[in-house]
Length: 85
Image 1 (cartoon, rainbow, N blue to C red):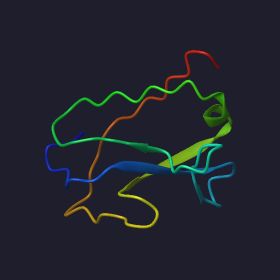
Image 2: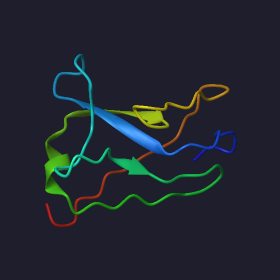
Image 3: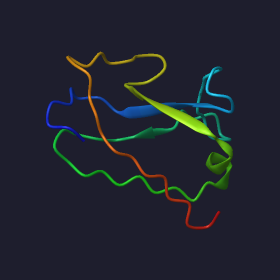
Image 4: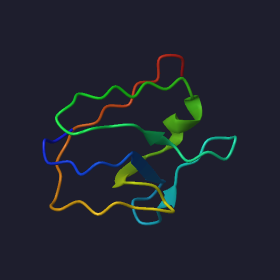
């Protein structure tokens, strides 16, 4: 995560066409999130193969109910890992 990251969990939206976006939830109804912090390499491992069907992903600072505005654009890298998919 970038050094300037304002404290917030990372959540995501998914899309099959890159135009229509929906929040990502698991089958129990929990919003997908990753606990992250500034200046850290944060691992996000999942064994949930249902995430593999998402073609496009965009990330959000904060949750769907309470987004957190960043002070500036934040650039970071993210890699999905599906070890049992």
